[in-house]
Image 1: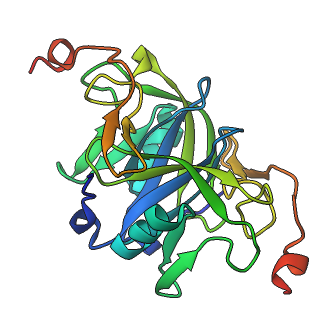
Image 2: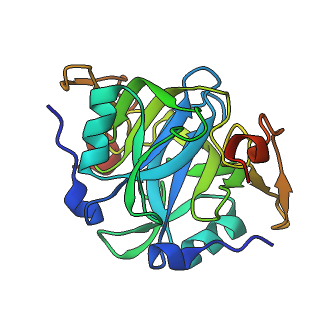
Length: 126
Length: 126
């Protein structure tokens, strides 16, 4: 059984979600021990919301859950990589596939990339 | 010009390196403002080493630098995704392509995956 080094991050470690089909890096959020255990138990990603200070079952509101396909842990046990099926095709609250949709150009300017897969107003009602 | 939210991580933000060709997630490490600026300036990834408490020009010892191909910032400006050419083909100090080479099986056991691309003894002389 693997033991994650939660103490290295004061109880929180970064977790990366990558789409198992497209290979896109979808998002990064944080896990604590409880959310890690819930993820293993349920097969759906649970993070720890640092702003709301609660377990965050990703997709609980939108239906866009992340179904675990594979889990990897890095060489020093302090970061997790979830390979997931992203239900609904979009991980970002903006409706885009990936949260990493701000491309930094060589002059430092930002280009928004990626179409909106869903309309956040319809999904979150705001 | 993008402004990263370094204050959210007490000066340090996570940065993910992804191989621009294979799409593999190679590693996660941390950046501070100085390493971010050096990365933009030089076109090679510079992290902040939390253990050594210094700027870490990835590959400076091994020659296995990470050449920036694209840079993405996430929707709340607190995580960076570097798409890189990984010189030498391996990002991990163990000689494997990716630091994420511990696959967690459904019973919680770990399988090591990925061949060693280089021999760490030869590269680091230890």
